[in-house]
Length: 260
Length: 290
Image (tube, rainbow over all chains, first blue to last red; front, side, top):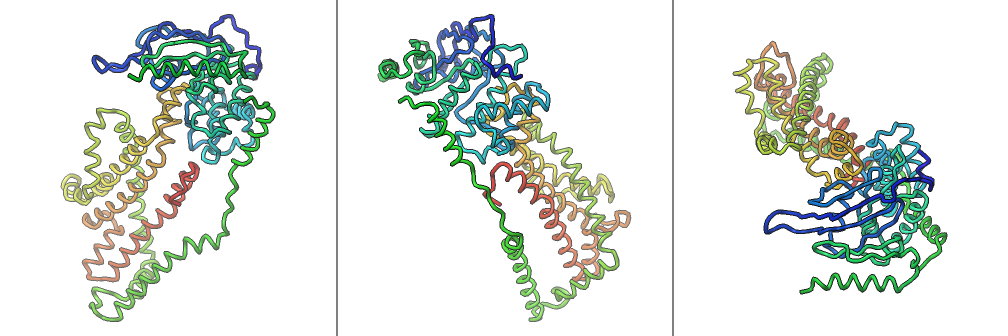
């Protein structure tokens, strides 16, 4: 159990997620909308990838497909990970359960025994620095704290795999509804958690600065239909405002292309 | 732009400290009693006062409007002879059995209606319609089908309470935020696990409201059935007692019966459903109505 918290998950495969020519069409006939059109994407185990795009670029659709909540119309998806965990913009905690119980619920669905559940849930809550409020219910917590409980729950569900398959965390604008200071704190919290757990993360956002700060790689998607436009390796340009500006320019181009 | 991480950690710890809610302290018990117990007592005293004044004015003859003290004496008499307990027991155990049976029937029915589209289309509106049909309307039919037997009484009770309970459960399930079952699916919950750990607990407030209403309906249906379907083999419940009072032109008995019926209704609400509902809502932070 505890091994998943250490940074030594050895893996024989070098891709955690592989999407090849993924296409998604909603509706039929004349009213059909192409949300994704031939998306290719590779994510390595333990890699932090940010998907960037304006509204309508199918970011959330892409995430749902990887999560298995939605099926692709055509194309291939290959996962070499444990069950991917999803975090949404809202924490979506069960309001009748305490923070600890919410985390335990994920473990229960994964078939973990009672005692191990309790121990692991507390461990994960401590990881997101919420060990003290394990017995509080969601309505007694602030928005940022709730989102951290949701993070602990997501980690619980994806790092549970017994065969040590690399974990995968899918995040759909998880900090968009938070105030600026809380968002700032949570971003650094997420980076810390990512470094300690060696989880691959696909992080969807429309905020270029957030993408550059968090990700190792930023992938820009076009809108309607969504395609991969460009990628940037931003591992070494964390404090480089030029990179932010450059990505911003491209994002604006993608959006203004729809002005006509 | 880059803030050193340990500074941010401090900011985070500060935010958490600010965000931890203050412990709400409970007011002392006498103050809570003053707030919630005294107003209804005053209202009841006022009612008694008006009643006493009306009686004293002698606008209505004694056989229509008795003195409060005469009704009180009738209640004391029936309690001291033990009659009141046997009457209450007869009615209450019927109501409780009927209610439990209604819960057992209505819960799977409500689940079916809420989750199976065809079933909802077929009988969803019928069930809502049944709620507006006074269950006393079933008494004549039930007497023809079952005779004047306990079956008649239970049938009427069930027809009164099953629709309320089932509809409450359906409403509870309909009002679940769609994100919760989605999260369940993302966490790997199967259909059964999702129903047990997400749908049912999430629907609990609506279900509880349905149960509460179902109890009220089964109690009043029972009274209606007992008043109309009277026979020696059924024993004397509150309804029969009321019926007897009317037959004997004994207004004291009639009013005493009405008070006892009310007493049971209010008692079950205060002792059972109110605390249950309060506990469930408080756990979810829905304290607005309390």
